[in-house]
Image 1 (spheres, rainbow, N blue to C red):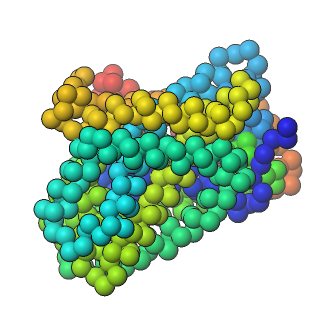
Image 2 (image 1 turned 30 degrees about the vertical axis):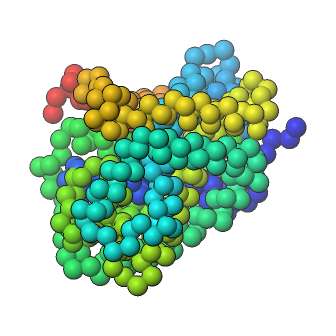
Length: 452
Ligand code: PHE
């Protein structure tokens, strides 16, 4: 059977952006920025995108498109019989860990969409917004049902294939997401007290930057750009032969960061305008957005649209998360695509219950913690702050020190058709020296070996 590819440059861009844009922008980015003090955190985050995220993204595209294989098969093809393929295996593992809690939050988003359609948020107050969020996440049965619905949708789209599933969905819905977020921003910016929220985002106060904040910014950069776990290897393997890999990486990183900022602009003015705490944590999005829309004409229609599009963002990101093990099982183990899609989704939904039930701290599972974290937080912490950066470091070392520069040049220039000499040199230098050094410093610091 012929291996599928995306059908055009535009399809490549929207599918890849569909992977990058997700709950990371709309849910995680605002609440982490809130918790770690705003602008200073943001500044470190931008540096991580530039010096760590972009070079690793290009490297993953290279591995994928050169070999046209899943993450495990790709590394095995480049260095047969070595341990490098474990980068791919570790990637599949990270993908499961992320999906366990991601599918839970996506379930809350679908549930919010349903509630918005029913009109549950009409004329709500702040206290009401908080209690509704509590009801949604505590369940205990309904969030599990929504988590299963989410996984059903993901499995269905994936079973339709790369072109008819992933490409069609992302190309239709990503542009809409932009329009909607901008409408939310206009509303948020016209709230009384909006300026305070914007100041919070832009104020750079480096005294708030703890080592934990730096590690979190780095982890967020990986999580945001879907790096360090083979997603971009897998998607890269579906890219068209004439795609400019540097160009795609730059466009995707830029657009993704723009969406994060637009989400921040929608959320922080509301936070300040309604006197919420910017450091409210994972519930931030769910408590602010219904308030933004509660008092304007057609607010409910906008609210439905917003949660619809957040559902889309979450769903398109999950497609890419599950595609990593899915491509592995279909190509390396010969499992039929629909079957692999269903089995993976089912396993994720079932184990994901642990994350969903651990949110209610008064429940049996929720009160169980290990070193201060419950299941939800551990899945999140180990994947974002440990596995993705370690995966990224290994990819940087692999490409920087185990692949010949001529080979990189040939693939990245599309066999000489693009003139990339100067950008290649900058990329190669950063990838060999800057990226690994930054990653090592942050790691050694986070485990306490290096103190600054
Ligand atoms: N980038 C996605 C987001 O920000 C999450 C993701 C992580 C997707 C890793 C794929 C791989 O929501």
